[in-house]
Length: 153
Image (cartoon, rainbow, N blue to C red; front, side):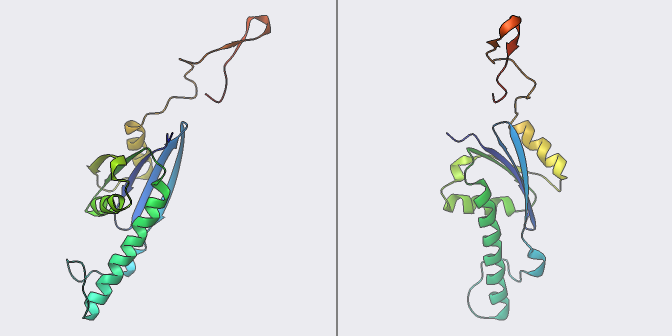
């Protein structure tokens, strides 16, 4: 059973992925290097003019960026997506094409955030139990009346 939960903030230039599995948090940053590309039209490009060729290159490069993101979140049980602009909806389309759209639990608008703000937002959505929280754990009696709590729970 998958227990990995992922929250990610993204725009067309950068994605910050915060994943939580077994109460351990990990962060990964993926960049798109999109500053090298200029989109000339507002529609998906066709054949023909140099602008259309550049637009096609732009959309192909953006698709590769979204595919990289999906590689890192494919094994999630739940996905939270937030960010500015339409990038989150473009990623949603790619997740639909990959058969992973059902894992999305929320899509939210969020402007530029620091990595700490992103992690905090994900932690609020997917709270983890503190490693100091011993409630619900069974204690194993030891000699002398002491109790031992398993560390890996």
